[in-house]
Image 1 (cartoon, rainbow, N blue to C red):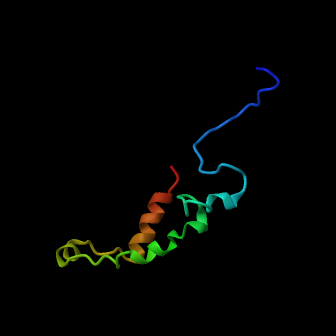
Image 2 (image 1 turned 135 degrees about the vertical axis):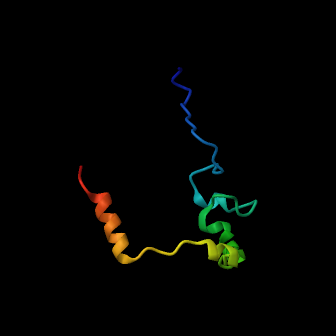
Image 3 (image 1 turned 45 degrees about the vertical axis):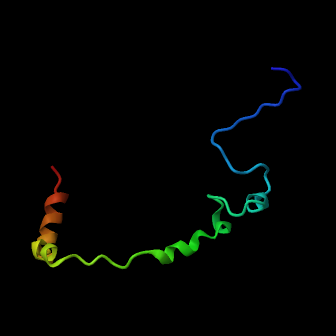
Length: 81
């Protein structure tokens, strides 16, 4: 390799053309992966509400175990062989 040629390394494509973070938001507007400047935070308000299962699913669920059953199961799993 000649001394006049500078080595360049690249691992992944990156939208930055320089080391100045302001260059990411200038020109074309927000770009994906620009952090807080991308203004994509408003998308969280387009989420659906909580999932409410149907009556059939609720009827087929097993009953939760009692505290004593859970302690017995924990003791069984923690036994040393």
